[in-house]
Length: 561
Image 1: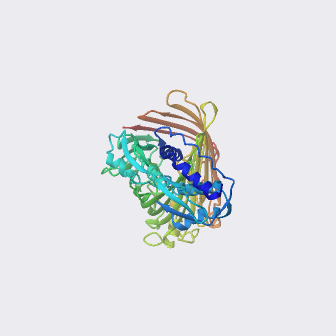
Image 2: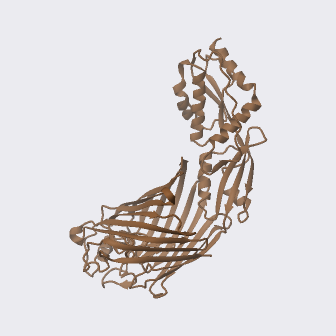
Image 3: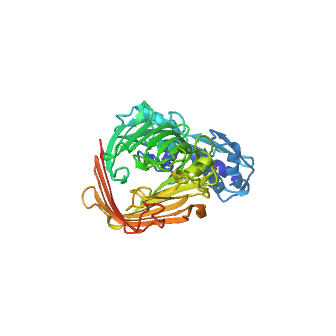
């Protein structure tokens, strides 16, 4: 039998079972659509076996391809995919590989509801391929009570009846929606009763949109009071548009007039664009973490940032960040205590940053990493070399350690958590910063505290560059909600222009153990750390530098309402 008749018979055989083939195609589609945030609502139909092609061993020439129908990719990209299959010596298997390659290219671009069909035809000219797309039939929302159906549907604008969604964009929208702490959405797909359609169900898990908590910790200092009382609140769906607001206020019961920390944050999702816009404001008298905010020096900060989410790859979720911050540090005060006379009232920085964040989940581990490049945009009060040098001195005399206001730095971090035998968990986390320039204190890398090297106070030593690493072993539950842990924390610092500053590098290392207790309404943490390797900075230079043998018990109690 000639090759042309073989191709005609092969194509005609496929057309003799249209109902069975439609079910097979839908089943194959559902099997292929196991993207993050998507799930099968029922088992797919069993694909019909491909009919054997009589004369499949016969060869023929492919002079090109003519692709028609609902083609989702540009012609140039389609031609590039099919180019390897053009030429003499082709068989039916060659055509099968060509259609599979084109469908794979569609799926890689998110067009998983497009199928390539091979109509009956004579060979000798260009091979005709027809693209047929499946579309969404009915969309059903279930499990929602606090969030309206309109809100859930607005979170996934790619999912529209009688349209074929791009599943890469849909996965990005699902990832953004599921960052909302009050709702989780899962898209389930099943074969529709209508031909060439697939029905979708949006399964919603909810929590109340508002949250409020209060915590008490001992992350303070002798100068400003050891205790820190924090109240944190927020709402995760303002105006019914998934706008998120959060705020935190921290003070000291012992020294309330010396400690005032306020942080405000507002986030707006842009689902169609695949991004989230955020603005923030903080003001603080002291250094340290409060709520989800961080203070690296007395003063205030204003920030705006945008996160652009990338399509998922396997189990990896990632996004790019772009940010601009205005930081104003009170250069003549440290932890609300006055410094030497003659220093400027403010030093400022205006870092412009771009970063990358990723999170990977597998059956046995979760890990993530991030990196950010920041550069200062000089100008304005306190953001000039004269104020930088005067504020850096720690006395009325200028200090020439800082020799540029056009500083740049690279910072980042990573974390990894996995399960071990018998219910144990092993986790590591780390952070780093590198700068070839000498920096003002508020932009330096700090070590020490409950979230850094435990056994010491908060941010007691700093450097222009630095590395921090921590390793923890967490036990199985000793009682409901109660776990123990062992940890090792360590860090290293480096300063530029050490001939001027007198301190080139420093390090800290501590070991310890802790307890974690958690219920739906209450969490308690207790970490005791002992410094094994202390700071090499003389106490005459830094009276607060941690020494070997020092220890501290870090306590925190949080109640959620």
